[in-house]
Image (cartoon, rainbow, N blue to C red):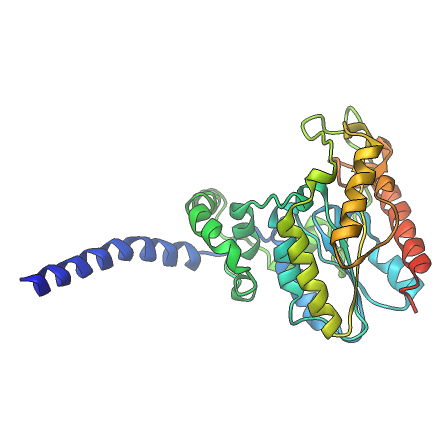
Length: 315
């Protein structure tokens, strides 16, 4: 009697699991629908990372990275290939560092330039699904801490994917064609010429007032853990700032200084440059408070090169 009950219970739970499993398999069998976006660039950037030999300069952060760093300029001045690995801040800093685990070469320089939301450890798991989509190589890099959030957000992501598929059909272009069509260059930076299109000079829906409390303990642990791995691989890791529109800044210089002091105190990598430099003029921002115009990217790139030179990490 008890055995029959247990058998029925097991069959019941298997039947419950069969429906979501079938739904998952169906959605995953469809073409990737987000490749022609910032999120979809992660796969191409991973392939670029794996296909570039020797020591490299790897800039890690959110969407500000491809809009702020001119990779060709960095390569010309340092003699090292530069890859802009940022896509969107909502993947979280831990995922970006996980993507680099097992991929570092001796002599690599990893520049971590997190946006303020990344320091707070704000992660959108549905956005992360858009980035990893059907790519097993990206799914395998997901940190264990992401798994509950990825599971709970799958339905929302899948509904968006299904809607796109029903509306637009399968993408006509290859992932690489979509990548270049978005405006990316071969090294992961945005190479399309751009001027500011912000009517007020900033996005008024994204004002921030960061201070020392903005730094998450989880981010501190993730960065320090990665720094230990990088050291064992013969790579150098430094921290620096991501640009932010000064018109959208509602905090204080003292708050920024306290945040930088806490980062220097609690995080292993050296901080290069000054966090207060992140506040750049509104006319240098393209379409958000983090995305620089072509002029702004040229300025930020030179500032980064100068900071790296001053820190003595360019050999």
